[in-house]
Length: 145
Image 1 (cartoon, rainbow, N blue to C red):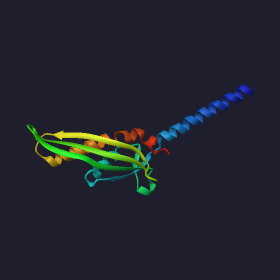
Image 2: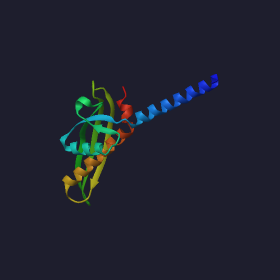
Image 3: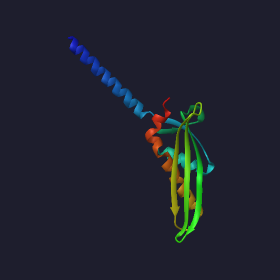
Image 4: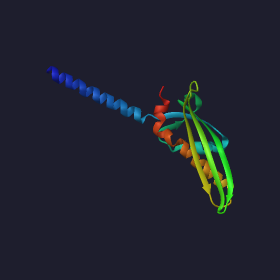
């Protein structure tokens, strides 16, 4: 085998190996734990369950910690019924040491009818979805050390 062929075989082997490691990293799921206001706990679990890149795990196994709070929830009467506005803040922190990796905000509103509880639930769920939308796309970057 000539020197050129050996070199070409080595380059091909490196490209294949690098390609496989990139694919394996891309398929790795980010392990998170959730600490949130009780009002949005179910919404957080529901949204994260629908995010294929994320696993919700106990705190001792987590890479990231998601601390979610309701920053604003207000309702007002309008000519068409009730309007509810919600804002949720999620702090993404390193599970070990607590270094803040990102701060996410989701905002949403719901209107119509007179059932304030139903409208509040819908607005909060939509705000949580908005805040967590980027976790699936950028979770690997946030979890890197």
